[in-house]
Length: 339
Length: 262
Image 1 (cartoon, each protein chain N blue to C red):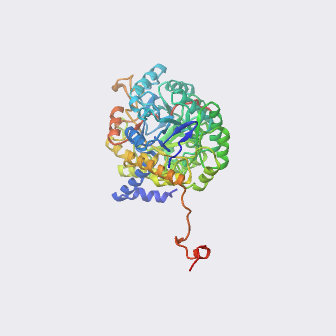
Image 2: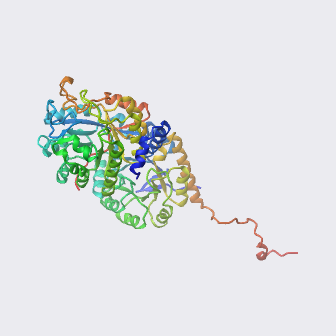
């Protein structure tokens, strides 16, 4: 493992040739371990009710947006829409509300999702191990939970109220999910919230700890960059494209087999380049509003973040093929989950 | 010299080259590689089979004469491997299954203990079981008892292209186990495949080296030739190796020569 100072040195080294060298090494390792394949997934926002106030998020509790929670028939319609586009891995998201989207609600959504999808993951509020066990049994194979920042002081500054204020409970969430049998766990930091080198280093430490304790889990990481939500700029520091490339490459060098996800919040042109460097899974044809696929008109939508890559699943597939990538729609076949 | 076929669970194969199907940049490269390499057994992860999408369904790119060997990639224990194998059979993928139980996402080393348990259950259910293991004599013996059809020891870390790092242990299996020994994982070059065959392995499975090659079909053909060459060398028997030069015209032969001298 690299020291914090080594990571700082790499991120501060702005020479184009060092960025290129890092990218070349990362690309080579990615091809060796993943070949020229690219996983595809689709996000589905089930609800934007949220009891936490996170200053950087469009869904936060103080924001006066239209609050929606999809009922069974509503999310079924959304699922059917995503399914007809070819997506077989779904990431279902909610705001962080234990009250509006409790375990029974999520379980039912997972059960319905298993009619349409082979891989089901959740990005919702952190829970206890026994709750993850229930969700695992209902067919949830993946949990995504970002620490956002590992800088405790900054964490307290941007998480003003709600359960998300509890840094330690959130930090231990991947561990609880793994104990419950969850197969795929995705970690992440919101680049720009705090000092980037410190956050990247702490994320790597977190990942190493988890790998040692739960070696059987398939880990992946995401590096969302702070973006504007309905024109409000929330970023505190700027991670430029070169730094972003270095973070992805460095992650690949230190964790050769770990998946690296990329969302549609990045510009299409940059996304296309990053595919070569280390990314293994991308979202496609995404809508980040509740009911955004098949239920609501565009003017009615309040997205969690603005999408930069508006291309449809078909367009992404065409692009991948043109770039000599094999798009992977199915990377799991749902089996009965029990420990 | 004529060879006997490779026989697995009563089925004969003239090719001793098994191909994995992961990591190819497109499905055409895969089918071209199967044809060029002449593989008659091809392994596919059930997790990658999409029965609904015909244009992306990997099975449609595997020629009909090829025996499909579904693998249990993603299984972390025996129970999951068993469930995946049953699901494969129910999905119409047949009853040939390569058991992969891997509970370590960093090194991807197989869990021999759980593999034996899964083999026991699935063999009893009538599956033809080809278990993938770390080369270990006790595990291999347990697999024989459990009803395995072959034993598939790894040559080195999966995807590493490092060749036969476990050579001595594989040799023990070749010497002691009366099932076909198929060297799987880590075989990164035709020369390494030939080496495994020269040792007496019954077959070789390769994937990453071919899938990630600039021209997969050409390399698949090279692997097939190397495997054949290695097999012939094994059948012929290799001359003994010596540490120092050995003169082909000995100097002291006259001492034991019965021919009378004048």
